[in-house]
Image 1: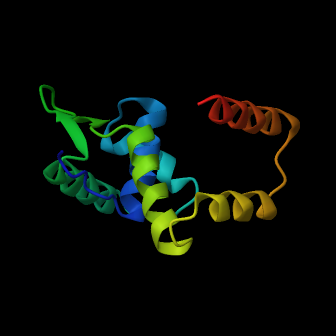
Image 2: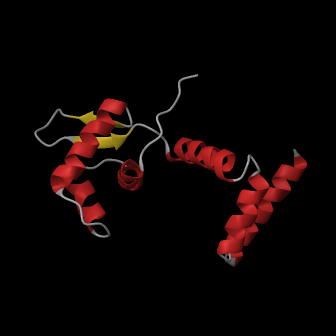
Image 3: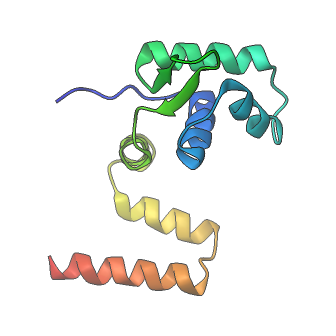
Length: 125
């Protein structure tokens, strides 16, 4: 099994943009990041170059403007990071993680229904 590289917080912000857009130029990524973070264009460019070298993103350089795409899936990255969080912060207890998450924020009706469906499915296994 190939070990997936864990993205930094800044890299995760870029991955979120690429997951939402599916593909984007440096400028497009930078514009989205600039909406809630003061960051320079060259910083975004450098991060994308580093992420390309790490294998976190793919780069299409067939045209003058490079197009970037995530090379890791949102789901695998979430699973990896949640697994690490469960191990390091909650002593391996997913129950403690869920209880903490539900205690910090009240889920809406749709979220509660989705949680109940997941619990029902787990009970069937």
